[in-house]
Length: 443
Image (cartoon, rainbow, N blue to C red; front, side, top):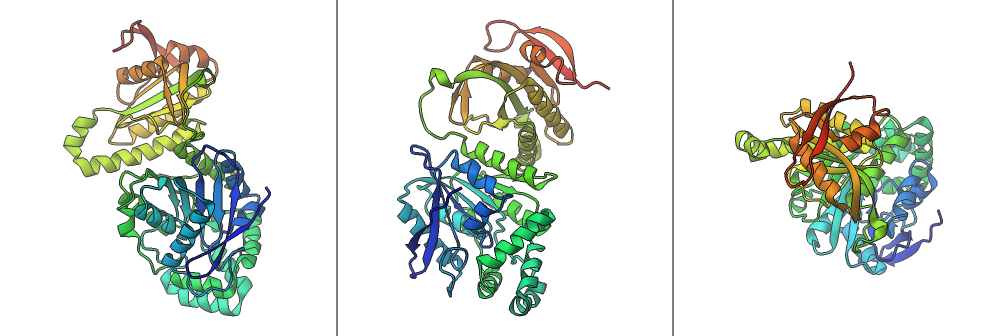
């Protein structure tokens, strides 16, 4: 990818490098602010990170920039505080001429993004955060910080390797860690790393998180447990935020899962336009809805029910993403999830995993699948087929997967399940009877 670097002057005179990828007029721009030790050039050059920019630039006008003291931004700086970074963020936004936009931030960049979103709710459309503890204890745990600062001063190559092995990079392959070490050693000076390590525990964004009003996704990929716990805590402080923990067996799969999650959340195509004939098409539709949610809320209490529902929803979304499905957040369902699939087989795989997850939870699911023509809109879908799928889910027993005859015919030889004929049903709001089948996994 070609990278054109531009510069803007922050409030204290620091020169900040920023770049724009993927000119997409009419879409909501996406501003990404990474962690301080991952620069813009690093993401472009490293094959393990490049898919981020390549995929997002297909969908949005994306603006990225380097933290002060790192990458192509001004290297020698005295102030790396959260307030200084917030001024840098605002300077880039002004230079890019942005009014309303999505924001994605990781680590320190996430803390800046979250603070900005709390202060400017009228400008941030959607917010994506990761590696975002409300009160970080530092990238290196406190007892080892002084020792690590000594290593930075006396043995720079060892300091870089130690740092890489103390962050989420430790879960990467040898080749990726080697490349990360090389990039990091070039991305900032010994002095700058020492500055960031010292300042990493000096901010507390707990109050700002509670003021965020934009729809927010908090996700966490492979990382030390303290990072996972921190991101989970941050999500709990943001009103109605979603938290998703991604677990994959390879670097490539993990990056792909993150990209799918973010694209689903932001909307693959966020150009607002009325539906046209080109938007029509056939889709396989899965509804997953919590059974007896009102009674459960009364029995469990609001707080406990909400926590259980969020946990269940996170696992459902992961199961759907793993089966190549897309959750439509634009569809208001209360305690349910609507997902679309390109094949009946994958919808059945996802529904089976949702049923298994449901069996392990206090909250049980109604699950129904139908296939038919739909009208698509950005992150939403309409049509009679959607209504039928919803009513099939309503007809299922908690933990049971029901499908229409259409889905059974599509997946009869490919899904590796058995279908029990439940006969024709008259479903609420549907004029003609619908033949229903229950999924039964062969022994």
